[in-house]
Length: 295
Ligand code: ADP
Ligand code: MG
Image (cartoon, rainbow, N blue to C red):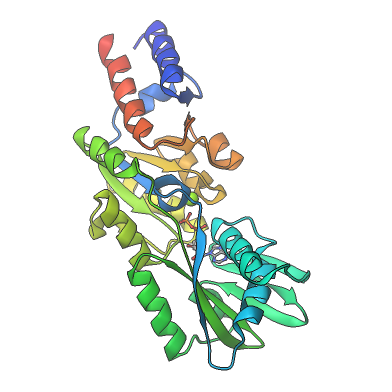
């Protein structure tokens, strides 16, 4: 396409709510055949809420909420914000945290009220030699089958409870997936979350389990993109989080949600200003038209 055509395409993009880094970006959409969608904050609203609280025998529910809430208050993860605000709503002001460490893609650990507390995925507890036990494992499995994210809580070397959080699939996501398919693209879902949760969200938007990449650690998301590329696919990635930045930069086309983090926006080739996934389809259509009009 001529520079003029690309400039016109860029201007038209701005009208649609698509900010394009540079005119050359449009060229990279030409061969895209696969669209990798991050789950949390991209396909779902990312506004999670605390739902169920399961305690291990002998554990006080209010104490569980206060310790877990206090620790999560120090994290910016959407799951953490849901736990912290839900715990504060249910139990009142949260205690101070004496030590805090974020473990990317797994959870948080730290010192609260003299207790060494772990909050996050079962794998975080397993890494510290803590087992969930049959009751909590059962509660976790049941919650995940319903599409909720289970958050395990441990202190003093024992699992003390499981909290569940859930967010909503965006109203526009199913239509967006359908429009991507109409353009001949294959949408796939990529997430660090549990497989049962991921498949339940995928089902809600029309993506089959074979196109779900779940339980992928933040640093491994980029490898999923590379593997698809190595298999001959030309990949667009849509994401919003710090943990999507490397994958956005590696994809043939990186689309950042304008509602997401600065890291994602900087790594992307273009930004969907309103965070509406349907505009991802508009962006690809616009590029095809721009490139198609002038040879
Ligand atoms: P996604 O890929 O869906 O954007 P992440 O990679 O950020 O999600 O996180 C993957 C999973 O790790 C989350 O679904 C959650 O189960 C767990 N997790 C990460 N951080 C925390 C935290 N601070 N508290 C509890 N769980 C967490
Ligand atoms: Mg995300």
